[in-house]
Image (tube, rainbow, N blue to C red):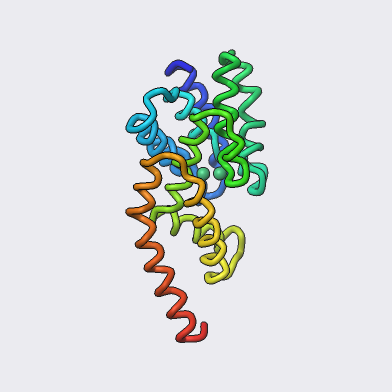
Length: 197
Ligand SMILES: [Fe+2]
Ligand SMILES: [Fe+2]
């Protein structure tokens, strides 16, 4: 993928994010792209940076169709476009692998390093104070969960995410950010219990 292909992919993907809801909008795709670039350049010089960027940009656009299974859906939407702009088969396979594997239940079966990088970037965004809040609001607003149900659901996922990270960058990032979330959760549950909400 050269930079021309990358901008074509960006232009193709961006409009889908107007239909993925405000909590997984285009700025989320760009945040994941930035984190993924950081992980790749600081730790994996052998990774194909444009593959990482293309997959980051595309990873959540399948939410326009459905939330459950959106990773596969994103890959399904992207594939015909990659065929159309004539991306090399090997590169195409890497991009689609990274897009389709950014799911806690699929990442262990990913074939390429680039998938691990995109996965780590997406998950550490959630494991940051900012990302935790973002997903918390999403669960309440769009999944219609109660405040406490949402936080318990999210905490369970965060534990899974933490145990599946691959890069040292992601592990260090979480080590720095997650204790703040844990502290907040502890206060949240204590308050809830004390005041019997
Ligand atoms: Fe996703
Ligand atoms: Fe995401």
